[in-house]
Length: 295
Image 1 (cartoon, one colour):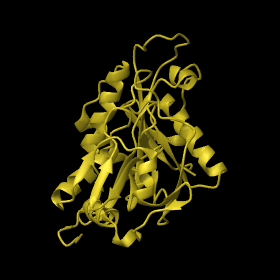
Image 2: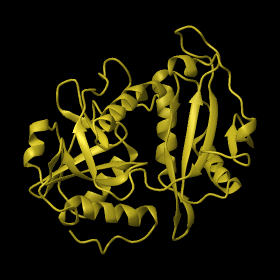
Image 3: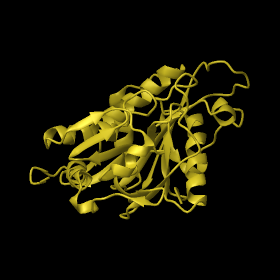
Image 4: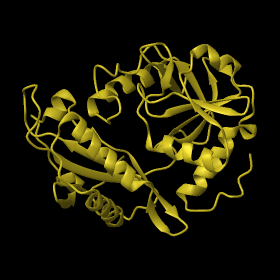
C-alpha cells in the first residue's frame, strides 16, 4: 500500500492528504501518457535523512518536461525543499519519492498549455531484494529513438517496460533484458546493464537507453576505484563468454545477475567487480567512506 488515510502529498503548491487529492479524468496524461516523472531515493545516512542525487534527478525531471514540451516553472532548489518537507511530514527516512508532472484536460494531440506537479513518497526497501536475478532476453525492444524521446522519463514509454517485465515473469524469470532496434543489448525495463569480462566492465552507450542517474554514479565509482569501463554496443551472444553482470537503477540500486536465459555467469558474485561496485554504492548512499573497498 503506497498511502494511508494519514499520508501527505504535494499537489500544485500545497501539501494535502493523499485521500483528499483529485485529478481531472480528461487529463492528457491519463488518456495519452503525455507526462513525465522521476524516481528518487532517500536514505537514513550517517548524517541524517538524505535524498540521494536530488539535484540530478530534479534536473532530469525538468529536462524531460522540456524535451516533450510540457511547461514547468519550478526551480530545482524548490523541488528539493518540497521533497525534504514531504519526507518530514510523513516521518519517512528510507523512502522512494515520486514526482509526477501531468497535463491538464486536453483531448487533442497538441502540446499542453500547462503542467501540474504531484509529489508523493512511501517507505521503500530493496526493489529486487538481496537475491541474484534471473533474466531472459525479451521479445520487446527498447523504443526506437526516432519514435520518442528515449532519454526522457515519459509516462507513456513505460507501457513498453510493463509488457517486457510481465512477459519475463510469465516465463518464470525475474526480469527482462531488452535489445535495441539493431539487436544489441540495451537495458532492462527499469535499469541499466553492465557486463564484466576479463576484468573490464562493458555497458551500452547512450542512444537507445535511458542514461540513468545511478549509471552515472557507477561510472564515477569505477573511476575512483580504477575499474576499467567501456561504453559500446554489446551483442547478446557475448553474454555466453562474460564473467558476470549487474543492473543499476534508483529502485534496483546495484543488483547482481545470476543468469540470462538460464545460462549462468562464470564468476561467483562475491568475486565479481559488480560486488565491489555494489559495496561502494551502499557506502555512498549512506554517506560512508568506501576507500576500504578492494577489488
